[in-house]
Amino acid sequence: MNKVSKNSYTNIVERVKALDTAVHEYNQFIADLNEKLADLLDEQIRKAEVISGLIEDLRDSAGEITDTQDGYYEERSDAWKESDSGDNYTEWMESWTTLASDLPDAPNSEYHELDQMEEVDLSVLENLTQEP
Image 1 (tube, rainbow, N blue to C red):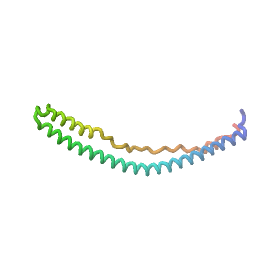
Image 2: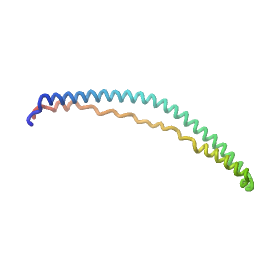
Image 3: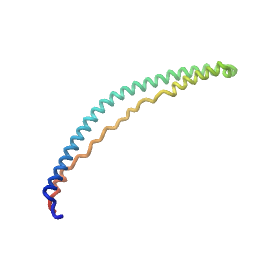
Image 4: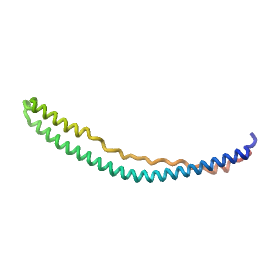
């Protein structure tokens, strides 16, 4: 091949320019999307903090109850611990311990911004010629 046809050359130039336009539009879309996501993320973080606080408060409250239950249980005699009353009390304590351990974990607030595409280097067109 000694020469690229004018039609092929023009077609390539138009495609590179179309790609450049598409990349600019995509990057603007991603920038707008990241801005909207950042606003939504702020709201999600606030809600996650409320949930985290509620979980922590609930765990603390349940922990206080189970600590008091444990103290009461330890003060009882071995005979009482082995009785039906002791067995019932142990089951009751376990239900409170289960409550504290079965609470969900706080929501994850990690967010990674979406990446824009690398810009098209239009200077590449300057180096394209139809002939060697």
